[in-house]
Amino acid sequence: MKPQTKKLLKVIIPLVIGVFFVVISIARFEAEERQLIWENIKKADLFWVSISVFLGVLSHMSRAYRWHYLLQPLNVKPRFSNTFMSLMFGYLANLGVPRSGEVLRAVSVSNYEKVKFQESFGTIVTERVIDFIMLLSIVGLTIAMQAEIILGFFEEQSINPVMTFGIMLLLIVIFLVGLKILRKSNHALIIKIREFLEGVLKGMKSILKMKNRSAFIAHTFLIWFLYVAMFVVVKYSVPETAGLGLNVMLVAFVFGSFSMSITNGGIGIYPVTVGASIALFGGSEVAGESFGWIVWVAQTLLVIIIGGISAILLPLVNKN
Image (cartoon, rainbow, N blue to C red):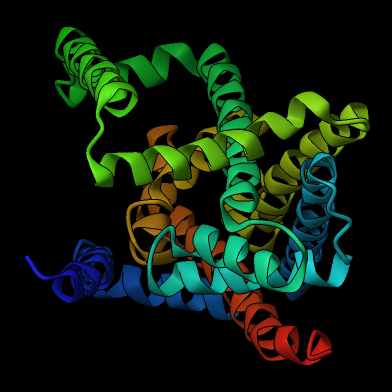
């Protein structure tokens, strides 16, 4: 398959999946229910939506500032404007091509600050690993709070835990075999991959040399507190979801977070997943889906606006 075709498929396939879920979202409701969802969205309390957007901006600023702590051991002292705008430009790119934003962030900082691309990308990989651990911690807390209902859901879906474990074991074996090939092979392509990964590893090791580790940890907890908070406060914008407890919100947050990686920016699938999660606990699926669309639209518009401005300003503020 040609490289151009692969790139095109990476854009088209997630978009098709997103459109598919939008169609499902519309088709599975009766006309009256669809009208009610639309009314809920139109009549959403903008005060709470604005609070959510504000918290979202704070989380992005904290994430950009936290990045400084990973770059400093590489003898890089970036400007906040560069890290923040690179971050937002990357988020904007993710709406078009999933996961392209991480590469774009590294490219932007390597262009405007004195740092190698591999090392910059390595710090982003480190960041993602730590954030994944934080998400898993929230998953663990959520399961502990709602174990009976969540396990019942998986049983209803006929998800076999033995098969899941077997797949995970197979992936680990494939990973170990691939690692051995990378270490031993003298093939030119493998050597290039190995050199690239060594640069990435150097960036990842920056956390071990970090002087402000406590500040980095504090920002990590702040970012995830803001993520949860900007999600939860939107429940007050729809009367039917205002009374939902934190336990329900955490489940919806977790499922929604995982769904974001399936399509471009979670288009289509995010509201469906959030709505289904709320319905799992006996809430109104109509209200839940309304809530999901409000969260998704608000945060996506935030990324489009600030990401678009960042794309324009980045080269201008660094032209010298």
